[in-house]
Length: 252
Image (cartoon, rainbow, N blue to C red; front, top):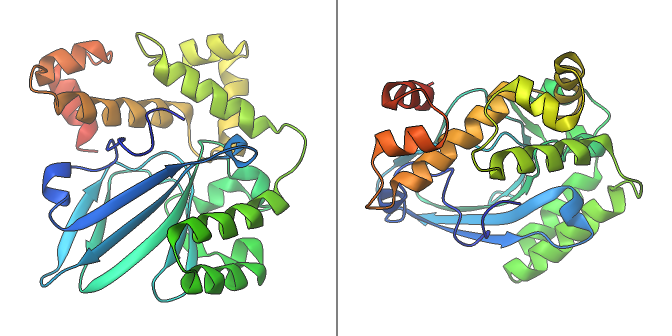
């Protein structure tokens, strides 16, 4: 985990505007599930007009339960995302750590990249039962308990390779200055770049460069919210060549 779950706004583009259209709550995952899950989250909206929210999504998988009683698994996005909201609604989700979802599915994790599939395709019929329980739950605390119990029951007891990837990514992103190249990340992991590439393909579904860049872009947005920070200062702090380089990365 990176920042406290209740204050982390890195994925939300223009959070001050977003806050006028929907609410977002987050709860940090706790042992034993925090081996795989970063946080739980819930968003709610009541809109008289449609609203589109832009997101710089985490390079990780989400399990999302929706107000219509359905549940979906949303894979890593290759670019920025946009979510269209209208009317009244809510979504309750589980954000896995980068590399944290692989132990929960037998399908290649890369097959989930840039797509969204019914949770029943990943977890079987049990996912529909959990979705119904989440819909009927009295409050969010009960939802967290229900989903945690479901996932803990599926989690392997032994340490998984994906946990090593999760720890590696968090160490790289939190380093000062942050690790920005695949070569340096491989050095930190004490493996060859070729081995690192295979590990990310198998446990994350996307390349290490995309993961590092995504977290840098999120960090840039969060730092730029501070009045004393200019975009050029932020670019320098996070290892971008200049402000133009940062702007180009954000717009991808």
